[in-house]
Length: 127
Image (cartoon, rainbow, N blue to C red; front, side, top):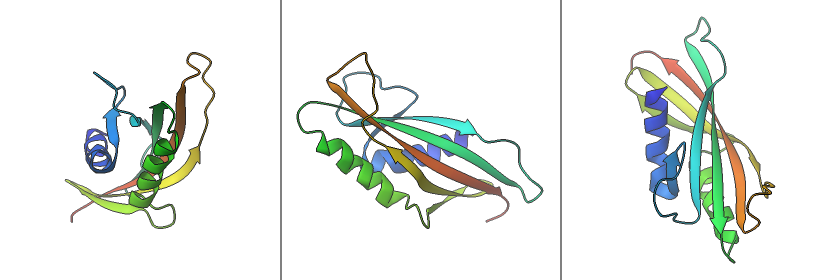
């Protein structure tokens, strides 16, 4: 799992403000925070599935910048084909599964947010 967090995080940091689990320090809007969830055990082919949940946040008047950032993520990890990332012991295919905008959070009316779900399929094997 650590390798998935590092490789996907490295790709995200190239295109958006991103941190794993929580943003530390002064916020740079828009920014995204990631969480990784395993979807069960491996099957006989060695394939593992994971869900990478990205939550994007924005504060201010120009909320479209949050959607611009989400669009860059969708372009990086296309829904139809995904993006293949090489790992130490194989490879993984990362693709956008869904996007949910305007999430309601009663704690802060000025904070806009959306969620992007990435689907990850990982195979172990030699490159």
